[in-house]
Structure formats: structure tokens, C-alpha cells
Image (cartoon, rainbow, N blue to C red; front, side, top):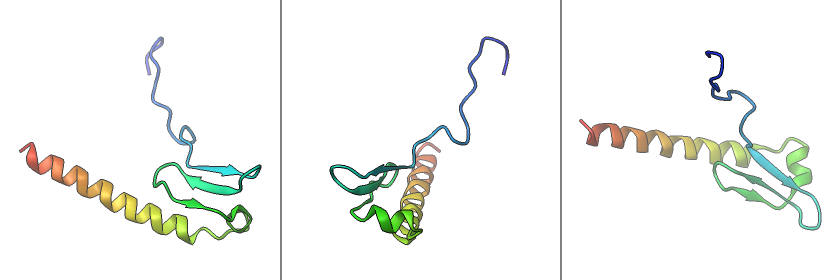
Length: 73
């Protein structure tokens, strides 16, 4: 980036999940909207629900981009 210009923030510049431990207890994925009410399990590594939700979300994102590309041609 040239001096005086701001470059786009890459890796690490986006919040993926919010962990709320008090007074409520849940973990919410900010991209997919998935909310799990057992943060202890997530912190222990049980991420399957988040992985599945992300993959479904990503496929939907790709389909949206493909549809927009086809409609603009």
C-alpha cells in the first residue's frame, strides 16, 4: 500500500464467534448465526455444529455470487 492509504485488514480482522459465559451462556457464530447454548463443550473442542453451519453458509454464499454473475452477463 502506498503511504497514506489504508490497506484492507486480512487474517484476524474479523470476529468469527462470540463466547458469552455470564450471565447467559452461549457461543454464536457471527457469519452463520448459529447459536449453541453449551460453551463448555465448544471450548472443549466440539466444533462440528459450527463446521457444518459454516459449510452450508459458504455454499449459499457461492451460489449467490454465481447467480449474480450470471444475471449481469
